[in-house]
Image 1 (tube, helix red, strand yellow):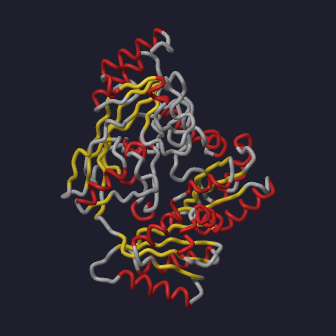
Image 2 (cartoon, helix red, strand yellow):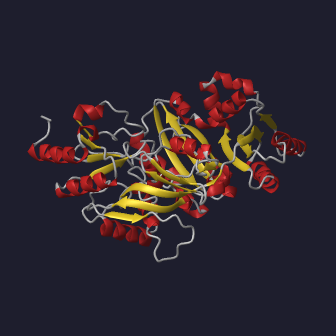
Image 3 (cartoon, helix red, strand yellow):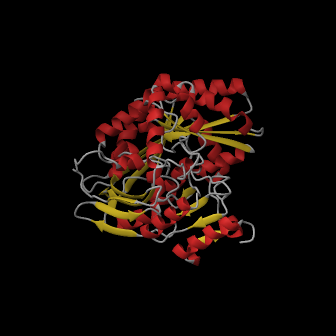
Amino acid sequence: MNSVNHAARALVAALRAIVGDDGLRTDEQIALLDRGYGADNLAARIMVSPGDTDQLARVVACCAAHGRAMVPHGGLTGLVGGASSREDDVIVSMRRMNRIVAIDTASSTVTVEAGVTLAQLSDALHAAGLDLGIDLASRDSATIGGLIAHNAGGIRAFRHGMMRERVLGIEVVLADGRVYRDLNALTKNNTGYDLKQLFIGSDGTLGIVTRAVLKLTPLQTPAATALLGIENLDAAIELAHRLRTVHHGRLLALEIMWHGYAACVRQAHPELAALGLTDCPLYLIVEVAHDVALDMNAQLEDLLGSALEDGVLTDCVLAHTRAQREKIWLLREDSDAVAHQGAFQLSFDVALPVPELDCYVRALSDALARFDPAIKVFVFGHFLDGNLHIMLAADRELATRHEAIEHLIYERLPALGGSLSAEHGIGVEKKAALRRYGDPQRLALMADLRRLFDARGTLNPGKMIDV
């Protein structure tokens, strides 16, 4: 490794002694990898991939002894720079810690290593008639450790909560190489501070998650899916009320899209025109689960028919084939289509009380139009938990105006009871905003915690909050 100094060569040799040749990459070997969604994810020149918790603990202790900061890597699907690295950092990839340790059908729990992908886990659980209760578009790449570190939510959070609600036990390697083990699978465990919650949503700044015990739910398979056209948010709220009243326990998804976003994806996928839905200001995707006692297609068709008669719906398309269902979900999940709308993009993830969504989006669209009429605004999200994903595209540089745009996105949230990060975490991108809009006392306590767990700031430096 000719491009690094003697100290770096010594570190590389020490790490290789721990993980072997298969667990170490440097320089060009790193550059050849997929960097995911972050431009700086692969800026570091050393990447280590431990094979188990013991190796990881030794790696962390080794890096600490050499004064090197570490950046944990999962599936690299994060959108706030939580996996970004610097040249002198050491990337700690969890790719080799990808084992499903045990599925306990009696207690409906699973013990899993941090590098397992959501899709990998879901496939194994579904074969046993179980489900994690978490689903999101990046399921094929997102890892369990990353989902825990950023407290991911996704499509079914309104039913089963975020990752915070799914984690029963956890194992974490701390900044000095010590291992904190609390792999308890009990739902009722009242033995003092619930320390695992400190690591969930911490962006990997307090410790590196290695294993977890997760709470499961019975598998519910989709039985009926529909794409709905709606005139306004009040109608969407009324429809959601009807769905939850009639199909409580069977409602799997209720996703919302503003017209601009849906039109953007349709433009990228001409085959979606076959869905034949009328242009509307808002669209909802509704999906309900199979019920052995009911014909759910007929049940959903009856409910939507009544909503059409009452004027709650403008139009609807019920999927009658798997291909139609896939087209409906493609409309929601291909957010990459926004890249076709401008050379520059920005993405935001916020949450508000559901009744405030419409006025917030209207006010934001007006503010952005005044700021720069050339900026295109695309909004979609998880309706029942008020989580909006806001994507902006333009042919003029946006990064240099990021702070001003960010202010327009966030300035109304506190008064509306909203949050500047719903499910993507803080990372690098939202750190300054958290400092500006966060409660000072809360931020002070967070800083105290980080100093307590990692006084030297060696775990994922520069993320969330500085020590």
